[in-house]
Amino acid sequence: MHEHETQESTQMEDRRAFLKAGAVAAGAAVAPGVLLYGVAQARAPEDAASDKVRWGMLIDTRKCASGCDECVTACNTENGLEGKTGPQDSQWIRKLNIRNLQTGAEHNLPMLCQHCEHPPCVDVCPTGASMRRADGIVLVDRHICIGCRYCMMACPYKARSFVHEPLTDQNPDVPRGKGCVESCTFCVQRVDRDEQPACVEACNASGHQAMLFGDLNNPESDIARALRTYASTEVRGDLGLNTGVRYQGI
Amino acid sequence: MGSWLRLAASIGAAAFLAVTSLQAVASGAPKLERGKGERCVEDVEYMKRHHPNLLKHHRDDALRRGIRTPKHSLKGCVECHASERTGSVAASKEDFCMACHVYAAVKVDCWECHATRPKASSSPDRRALPLMPGLPSGGQ
Image (cartoon, chains in turn purple, orange):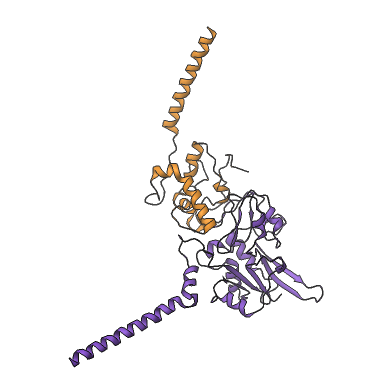
């Protein structure tokens, strides 16, 4: 009898230990969004983009080197742009030099589509071609873009370009052609493969590390931490567009 | 008398047209190159009729919702059906898409924006083969 009791108590302890271990495991799974967001980022191809994620970018102008155009080159290569900078050429990202006339302070920064939460280009589009995906990426649906260029007028950042000439030999991942408006897509084809946009990758590879890309909605992501810790600026914040691209140091 | 002659002539012309068009069906029907894969993603007869719907449905899902399943993607079609000779699905009249579309006189706009050949690594020759030289291609 005594023996039996001991056996039972050890069994109970085993069970208790097992339950405890289980509870710890479950806690890790449901802990503040870690696993949940992890799953959301590496979504399966058959899952739709979700509004639980909002993609954003933080650009540190103090690290952005004057004269460096690694991000621009990488963008051109990835998306099959020619790299010309004339008034009729496509530029999805461009380097700007800005100078405060009062203080003379100069800054160097890349300017691209700001992927606004309330994008003026989407507001004005007469066909619904200009659109914002659930995860905050602003895109042009070329299948229904009629090339009216109203969105180019509406964009406060001059981020959009119009394709004037017929194109050949496009990148299979980035279809583009004559008669449509286009702009930075945050390299949506790469983001959907759980990769970083080409500009961010190039900036990191060049050692400047001025660009940070990630999920603004995930409090554990590097970009959300940085935005929580340091002061950052929305360009034309007065317009209340809640841009996905933020700048530091301007 | 005049009207009888006209009737006879028109019957004759109709018969001639019918014969020639039948001949065209017999001899000029497009011959398609076989794709690289074992079999198509759907039944061939189904694809003949419904491939535009599948592509249209998939394009909206892929672009607007970010659903990038490979099964009905245009990129997948191109990778499998690019011609061995031209490396493309639309560079010559014999290439996979054009063979039927030229025969049926249905113009496609896909290749204004989409690449007609698979990614550079898998295509033998990327030197600019013009997109259907000599054929009217939309909007150009």
